[in-house]
Length: 114
Image (tube, rainbow, N blue to C red; front, side, top):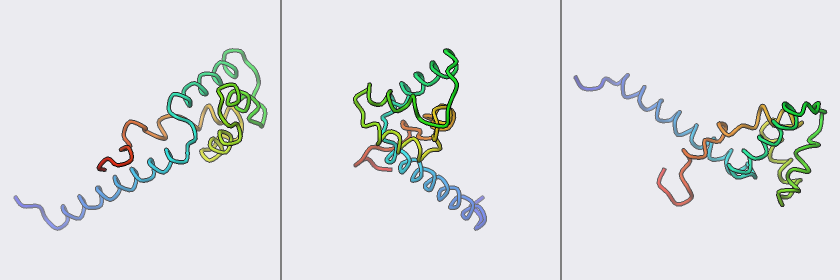
């Protein structure tokens, strides 16, 4: 049976949603100053500090800032970046700025076909 106009419209909407989500993820990856391995290292560090050692979270990025400096990264750029994704304090970074937001493996590299 050939596709109906409704089937074609549904398929078109689905493709449009997928393209929109892909563009959103690509933009998120562009705005994130950390590479995937750096973000994972930061999250591991924060997990250690906040949840294993039990250092209480304060309303700042007091652990993220020195971590960035120790990694040789620009702390201000890292803080700006995590704030864009809901990380206004260290525990919010741990809970909100997660690798699944970016789906790095699914985003085509510059110059690759989408």
